[in-house]
Amino acid sequence: MDTFFEQIVVRKKRTMEAATYFLSIFFGALAMCVSLFLTFLFIGSFFSVLFILVTVALGVGIWWVISRSYIEFEYSVTNSYFDIDRIVGRKKRERLISTECAQFEEMGWYTTDVAEKFKNRSFDAKVMACNTVDAGLLYITVRHPRLGNTLVVIQPDDRIKSALKKFTPRMVQGNVFDG
Image 1: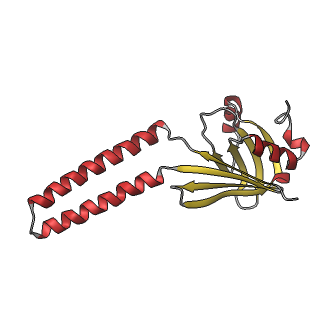
Image 2: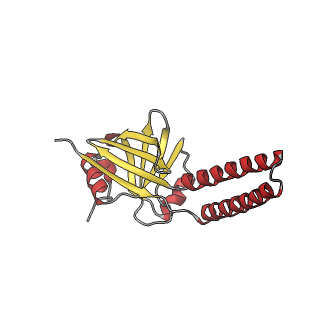
């Protein structure tokens, strides 16, 4: 019987991202208002058409910023394969990593001490598919054929943890799944 589990993790906006998001919308809307005002000021001239085009372009830009700010991560375990996808704006899907659980080299809880330890280690790639300020983060190191030596940090629920426990070698699991 096949095993399939998936989980969606919505990435929370960090303070700087939220500020950038708010400021771009605020100044974009302000520029749209100014452009509309100038359109009515120069009505009937070439400049009114130009300002209408600028207003439409600003509206599309604001819509683009809003839609790109919503990011989700999808974890899926299919039999012994573990995949992570990033979904941007609920439309665009990008595969971040796909690997077999048997290829995991290390696994453990991603605490501040572990994060400090990993600052001194070099990785070819880091996949941070989680909200880094939340608790319950799990790290996995793997030698990926395309990405090289990779650090993966995830925020799994109980179903993903049980699936990973089932397919990950016991020597790699350590004390992750105790208790």
